[in-house]
Length: 604
Image 1 (cartoon, rainbow, N blue to C red):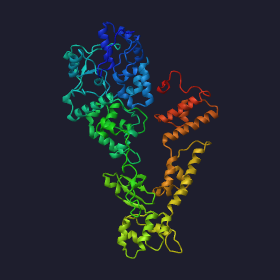
Image 2: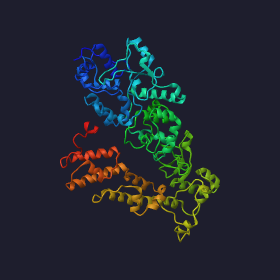
Image 3: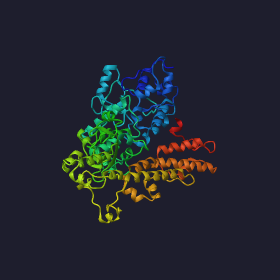
Image 4: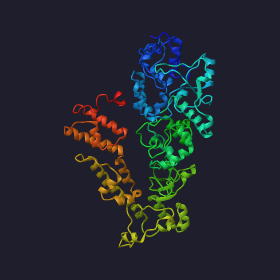
């Protein structure tokens, strides 16, 4: 049991607290200090992420008020790494820091593999040093100064100095000397060798890192793509469907920061498999916090602004409900529309919103909306609906109304009124569900060869119009039945449910590719069954395990991966499923990992 323990100062790293204890205890040997603090001499003096904290707290004086979690949160660099780790792995790192198994901490955080701006020495700010001595009578190592990527003091905006320690003992905690000689320190950066732009962004990066360390409620940000996708879409770096425009993003990233800064921070983005590409794809590997913060600053301007906007959706047309713009309806201009389907314009790549009202009126426009007035703008009418046609019939029966007045009353041009005032019943047109445009001049002309193929009604001599609603409904039933067949086929090796595969199996590939916009029900049903690569791999793993168990074959991880065709770096969801299956059938098969092989999931 310790007789005393120094209270940590503001922003003091735990390594510094141990160094001050060593100085006050009067211990000559550093191993005597280790024995005092931890009850063992095998502890390695680690600056950023120490271990044995539970043993330390068990030896602190009575009523000390400290616990491992408090030390980890306030006096280590764990908050710097934790938000960008999978939550389960972050919890495992906490357990490692509390325990005596400190050799796996840096591997679990990805520090060993990343090699990004690694700090192996102690850093200090000379102004902080003077202020600490004046306020506390002694100086200490500040936690923020030791974080990777920090070359400036966040308080004084001055370049940090590196302490040139002569000690080679990895078990020794070095306190800040009471008298600091110029020969003991050197500047961490050569100012004259760096551009003003690089210096500026290094200073800004420090602000982000300081906030990351001190903010009390940072969300888990491991699933980076899901978090920043709305912003990527808003800035034009991603399509409405979520595809990242990597070339555009890489070019802007390089221009924004410059090669000098990226090289200094070990964050160059050369090559097709750069870290920036992985940071904006599905989460499969840990990306270093410094790199994550660089991406966030590019998109949001600062980490603080990112936290303010965290969780916001990409809504190019605002939130529902939207106004109905059917001038024939009693609820005209009222916000009653709750359905909006967003697609991408093939020409401009801008989002296109199609709004469906309960009155049958369907309209679309290109976005995103910039001002409130945009909500009341129609780009194109795709369907008028029964109410509109009823109003048209009513107005046509009034002899005192000109076609121009009728057009104005219905919100269309005169040509549209002429087109739908022909003898053919407007109700017949409604039932046939024809999509029409607001401006007939914008309508695409039918090619001669296509016109010849159009079926003709012998009685009227007019071409029969397609009932798209009925066709859509019938096709959606066929598609859903086929999807269920694919998923229910357990006798054969699983095949992935995709748009092309389902459409080919029912013999409608070309038809469905050409008419996606006219088949909203079918596309919605298909979207519920279409599998991502990771989801399909998970289903295939389940099937393979069942086959192996049924055949009394040995169940091993490598065998499952081989039969499932899994390449290195497959998704975490698939990894979880493999482990789940191995645990479930552990009675029938040996353990899936060899002796000594252990993962952070097992330790949790």
